[in-house]
Length: 304
Image (cartoon, rainbow, N blue to C red):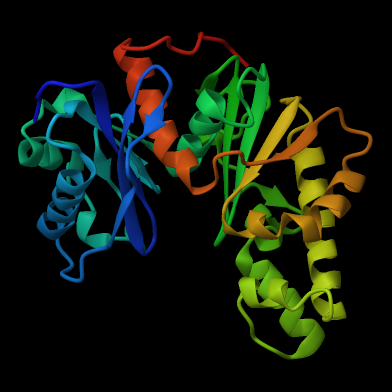
C-alpha cells in the first residue's frame, strides 16, 4: 500500500457503535477526509478487519504513501501486542491478534500497525495539535458513557508515575463509597434527572431542555460540582496545569463548566474544552505512530 505522495498513516478511532478512519500526515498532523462505518453486523474478527480494510480504501487516496496504521481502541486491550481482551464490547475479538490480521489484510508489516487506548489517543491529539500543545503537565478527560483519562508530562502520555493511577485510568478508582464512574458518566446524569423528574431521558435530551427545564439545569450543575471535586482530589498529586475535556458530554460544557471551575478555585489548574473535538483520537493515533517511528519530532521523554 505504498505509492508516491506525502507519507502518512492510516488512523482509526474504534467506538462502541462505529469506526472512524482517515489519514494523518507529519509533521503538522493534518487529517485527510474522515470516513465512517458501523461495526460489522456479522460478529466475527474477519468481518471487523474487513470493515477496517474498506475504510482504509475510502480514506487513502491513490497517491498516498501509507507508512502504517494506528488504531485508538477501547480496553481491555494489549496495546503493545495488538491483542484484544474485551469481553463485554466486541467479544468476537477476544484473544484475537488484531494487529497481525490487519497487517496481513493491508499488506503491511506487523510492526507498522500500532494501537493505543482511546482516551490516551484523545490526549495525544490535544498534545500534538490541540488544547494541550506546549503544556508541561496535562490531563485529558473524555466524558461519555464512562470517563476516560490520560496523563502527560512534557508531551508524553504516561501509564504510571507519581499521581498517575494504574494504566492512567480513573474510571474505576474508589471514590466516596463507589467508583468515579458512578458520579461522572451518562448513567449518573440520567439517574439524577430521573430521580428529580421521574423521566428517563438521554443526556442530549436533558441538555436540550435548558434553560426552560430547571431540573436539567440543576442536574448539570451538580454534575459539574462532582466533576470538579473528582479532579481536585484525584489529580492533586499529579498537579497538572491543564485538564482538557472532551467526549459527548463536553458538548454541554456551558451547563456544567462554571460549577466545576468554582469547585477548582483553590487548585492551580485550568479546564479547557477540546480544540479538536471528534478528530482528537484520530490525530492522536497519528501523533503516537510518528513519535514511535521517529518520522516526526517525537515528544520528549519525561517522568511524572
